[in-house]
Image 1 (cartoon, helix red, strand yellow):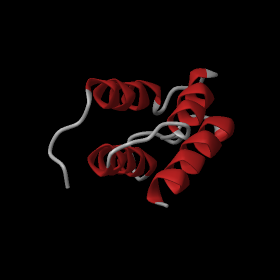
Image 2 (tube, rainbow, N blue to C red):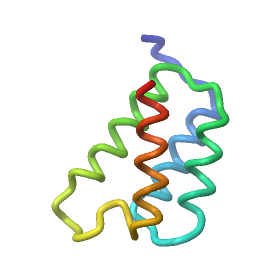
Image 3 (cartoon, rainbow, N blue to C red):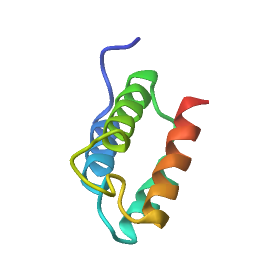
Image 4 (tube, rainbow, N blue to C red):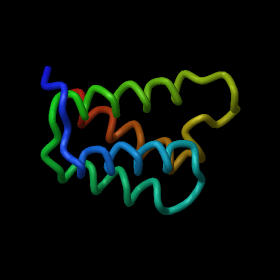
Length: 82
C-alpha cells in the first residue's frame, strides 16, 4: 500500500471525518462527492476504517446520524469496499 496520499485525499478524509455523525444535508454531499473520486487504496482504507468505527460506536444512539445520513454513509462504505 502506498504510504503517501495527495493533498486532495487528505482533504477528502477530513471532509468525511467532519461529516460523520452530523445530521445535515452535508453528509449526502460528502458521500456522493467521494463516490466520484479516484482514491488511493490507503485513502479508501482510512475512510472505511473511520466509517466502520463510527457505525460500531456505542457512544451515540445514532452514530451515523439520522436514517438518511446513515444511508449515505453506508452507501459510501459499500462503494469504497468494491
